[in-house]
Length: 88
Image 1 (spheres, rainbow, N blue to C red):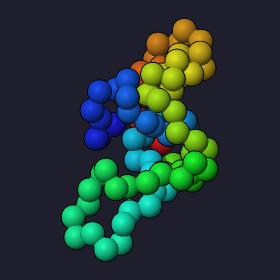
Image 2 (image 1 turned 90 degrees about the horizontal axis):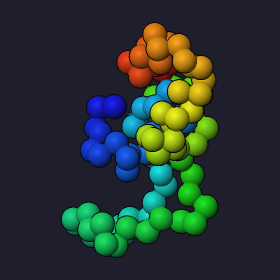
Image 3 (image 1 turned 180 degrees about the horizontal axis):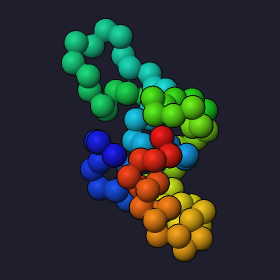
């Protein structure tokens, strides 16, 4: 995770855990400066990722980590390898 803030509030790819994911939003076209108070997010937003071909939807990092723990079924080496980016 190259842009990680606080891991609990970071959205990541459901497959590889990368934080290189995007959500559609509406930004006022006539503003010179980007003002986050004026950015609007549609109710049925679309998501995109620049990380892997297996992205389906965003997850909070903590949720993704729980899925990886289940998938690894106690295999510490596999868990560490995935966290180090071997799944991307």
